[in-house]
Image 1 (cartoon, rainbow, N blue to C red):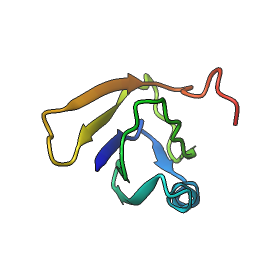
Image 2 (cartoon, rainbow, N blue to C red; image 1 turned 90 degrees about the horizontal axis):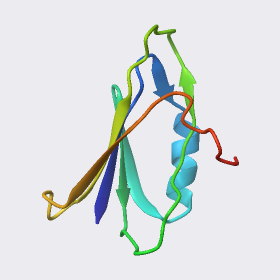
Image 3 (cartoon, helix red, strand yellow; image 1 turned 90 degrees about the vertical axis):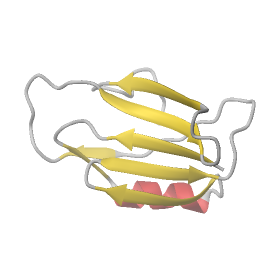
Image 4 (cartoon, helix red, strand yellow; image 1 turned 180 degrees about the vertical axis):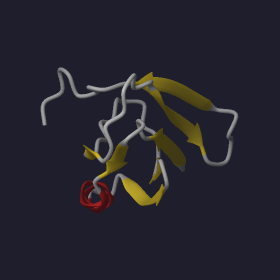
Length: 96
């Protein structure tokens, strides 16, 4: 099992219905939404690229928005991990 922890950009909140739709795809087992972090529990990480996305909405306007992080790691071997930053707008070049 692998986990993806997505820290929300300041002032943004996840759209819960879009996260629930991810659970229906069977790519992931479940999700947790706590304060400003969304955790996705994936069944597995495959050697081919996987696209996992959900919607967010701006709750509060924040000036000088700083990047947030996404962390992917193995549930059983937490030392095996990757971390990346993202910023707004994060969907440039992505078809929805």
